[in-house]
Image (cartoon, rainbow, N blue to C red):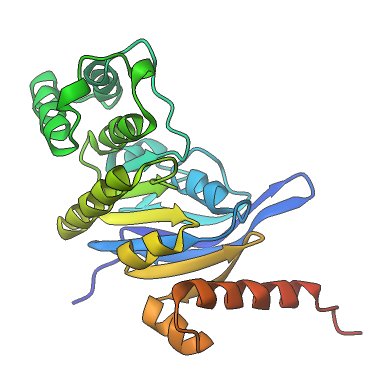
Length: 255
């Protein structure tokens, strides 16, 4: 018996003035799945993710997370969702542990459980060596790990990561890939936005390609290669993007 996806969005639209940043976007993410949202810079990826994470209100469309409506049940959604932004911003004068305690309090976590969870994440994410340093002194990769710990602190069923390997070295990037694969095995629904083809190919069960705010394609990688006749994700991705450009440039038929 099939179960409902943990994350679903239908017909999302977001405009900023006359600019349609997101146009009629629909997709879903199942339990135990990593879904990759691919697109060039400025394609609308971050705008989509911010709407899904309750940080930006859509002009049109519906979003459900674990059965909760994002517009009407925002607090319930935040209890089951973890979001990591593309530009990790930590409180520079707090240590990683103090930073995590602050967000644990915001989530209303019981103190004993929160401390156990923090210790678990510190060990799991390799934060132990710099747990007592101020966040402002940490490297980009170290800050990224602390940011991911924050997103995972309340053990959410749905995890949204915006360009998670941005600025990371190869060791930190590989660590993150392996970590997300383990979280998938635990049944998490994981949505990752990226413009890095190798990362998407390694991580994602399904892919959505977004360009100029429109979702041009959504399916498994094998289906993309089959549909485009291309041998690699990069070439298949470029073909889909070029098709989208051609459709946009094509004049409307005369009435």
